Length: 230
Image (cartoon, rainbow, N blue to C red; front, side):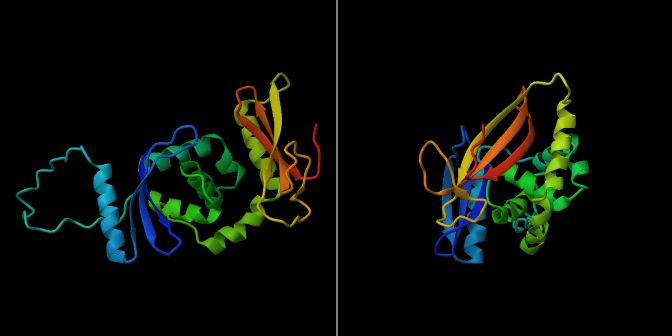
């Protein structure tokens, strides 16, 4: 998938980039330029759009006689990645997540945005805006996060996954663990120096995932970094 994205630079400018299809986790990024004003930003977005449309023919709408040749192009008021977003929403509902979360739109939008582009929670707002979906505010996101971190919320999602996978007495399940490291010198009771084979000193947590035989996720759990799991 190829799309245009905007990122903030260290100087505060807005960099316009074209992200080309990724393979094995790596992405090819074409830098168009950095804008310091709204006019520069609009010009760079127009250049990126032309590059994306390069080699594509224009559909003849038969309005050449209606619109004067000297008329200015109609401004684009909004755009939406309709097919992509609608497809992701459909799969989200099919997996039972909409029912499991009580139709929570903030959680849904965060999940789908980070499927489109794995990024931070804050930057997910930018992804939603580029997709053309009304994005939640950052304070709204922060108010909802404590709810998403509860055991009940995770259990509801796990139940939806188990139902979709048809989990039963004869189902083969697989379990594996890994560690996540944090760039901080302070432990907080959850992120603790662990027992990693690499002998790393940074605080870490242990993450375990349960899947069925096809690799479909059923449950994920996180444990304190100073616990050894067998």
